[in-house]
Image 1 (cartoon, helix red, strand yellow):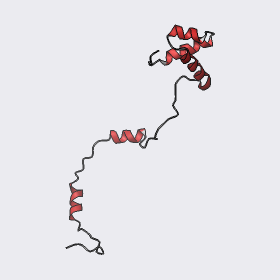
Image 2 (cartoon, one colour):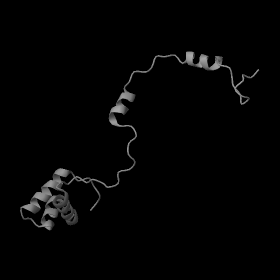
Image 3 (cartoon, helix red, strand yellow):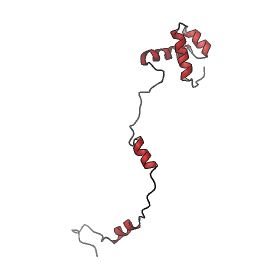
Image 4 (cartoon, helix red, strand yellow):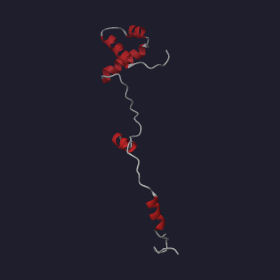
Length: 104
Protein backbone atom coordinates (compact mmCIF):
# COMPACT_ATOMS: atom_id res chain seq x y z
CA UNK A 1 0.00 0.00 0.00
CA UNK A 2 1.21 3.51 -0.66
CA UNK A 3 2.40 5.79 2.11
CA UNK A 4 -0.33 8.19 3.12
CA UNK A 5 -1.32 10.24 6.13
CA UNK A 6 -3.85 8.36 8.21
CA UNK A 7 -5.93 10.42 10.64
CA UNK A 8 -5.92 9.72 14.36
CA UNK A 9 -9.68 9.26 14.14
CA UNK A 10 -9.29 6.29 11.80
CA UNK A 11 -6.57 4.82 14.01
CA UNK A 12 -8.80 5.16 17.08
CA UNK A 13 -11.66 3.45 15.25
CA UNK A 14 -9.35 0.58 14.31
CA UNK A 15 -8.27 0.14 17.95
CA UNK A 16 -11.89 0.21 19.13
CA UNK A 17 -12.82 -2.48 16.61
CA UNK A 18 -9.96 -4.66 17.89
CA UNK A 19 -11.13 -4.07 21.49
CA UNK A 20 -14.68 -5.21 20.69
CA UNK A 21 -13.38 -8.44 19.20
CA UNK A 22 -12.66 -7.93 15.52
CA UNK A 23 -9.63 -9.62 14.01
CA UNK A 24 -6.78 -7.38 12.80
CA UNK A 25 -7.15 -8.73 9.26
CA UNK A 26 -10.86 -7.85 9.16
CA UNK A 27 -10.24 -4.35 10.56
CA UNK A 28 -7.48 -3.75 8.02
CA UNK A 29 -9.72 -4.82 5.16
CA UNK A 30 -12.67 -2.72 6.36
CA UNK A 31 -10.63 0.45 6.81
CA UNK A 32 -8.28 0.00 3.84
CA UNK A 33 -5.04 -0.10 5.84
CA UNK A 34 -2.41 -2.76 6.40
CA UNK A 35 -2.79 -5.41 9.07
CA UNK A 36 0.61 -4.46 10.45
CA UNK A 37 -0.55 -0.87 10.97
CA UNK A 38 -3.62 -2.03 12.90
CA UNK A 39 -1.44 -4.18 15.15
CA UNK A 40 1.06 -1.32 15.65
CA UNK A 41 -1.72 1.11 16.65
CA UNK A 42 -3.18 -1.43 19.05
CA UNK A 43 0.24 -2.00 20.67
CA UNK A 44 0.88 1.75 20.91
CA UNK A 45 -2.49 2.30 22.59
CA UNK A 46 -1.85 -0.55 25.02
CA UNK A 47 1.66 0.67 25.94
CA UNK A 48 1.27 4.44 25.93
CA UNK A 49 -2.47 5.05 26.21
CA UNK A 50 -2.40 7.28 23.15
CA UNK A 51 -1.93 6.95 19.41
CA UNK A 52 0.02 10.14 18.99
CA UNK A 53 3.58 9.29 18.07
CA UNK A 54 6.19 11.09 20.11
CA UNK A 55 9.67 10.85 18.70
CA UNK A 56 12.60 10.35 21.05
CA UNK A 57 14.67 12.52 18.73
CA UNK A 58 14.03 16.00 20.04
CA UNK A 59 16.90 18.01 18.60
CA UNK A 60 18.59 21.01 20.10
CA UNK A 61 16.76 22.83 22.90
CA UNK A 62 15.43 26.28 22.11
CA UNK A 63 17.56 29.25 23.04
CA UNK A 64 14.67 31.73 22.94
CA UNK A 65 11.46 30.69 24.60
CA UNK A 66 7.97 31.71 23.50
CA UNK A 67 7.52 34.79 25.69
CA UNK A 68 10.98 36.14 24.96
CA UNK A 69 10.61 35.53 21.26
CA UNK A 70 7.19 37.21 21.11
CA UNK A 71 8.41 40.24 23.03
CA UNK A 72 11.33 40.60 20.61
CA UNK A 73 9.25 40.10 17.48
CA UNK A 74 6.33 42.33 18.42
CA UNK A 75 8.11 45.15 20.26
CA UNK A 76 7.91 48.56 18.59
CA UNK A 77 11.03 49.60 16.71
CA UNK A 78 13.39 51.88 18.55
CA UNK A 79 13.23 55.53 17.55
CA UNK A 80 16.67 56.45 18.84
CA UNK A 81 18.96 57.87 16.24
CA UNK A 82 22.39 56.19 16.22
CA UNK A 83 24.17 59.45 15.38
CA UNK A 84 24.87 60.49 19.04
CA UNK A 85 26.52 57.16 19.60
CA UNK A 86 28.60 57.43 16.45
CA UNK A 87 29.61 61.01 17.33
CA UNK A 88 30.82 59.99 20.78
CA UNK A 89 32.84 57.16 19.29
CA UNK A 90 34.53 59.39 16.72
CA UNK A 91 35.24 62.24 19.19
CA UNK A 92 37.10 60.04 21.65
CA UNK A 93 40.87 60.11 21.12
CA UNK A 94 42.34 56.94 19.74
CA UNK A 95 44.53 55.05 22.11
CA UNK A 96 47.43 52.91 21.04
CA UNK A 97 49.56 50.35 22.79
CA UNK A 98 52.05 53.00 23.98
CA UNK A 99 50.90 53.15 27.59
CA UNK A 100 47.49 54.73 27.00
CA UNK A 101 48.82 57.99 25.60
CA UNK A 102 46.80 59.47 22.73
CA UNK A 103 48.33 59.29 19.30
CA UNK A 104 49.38 62.50 17.64
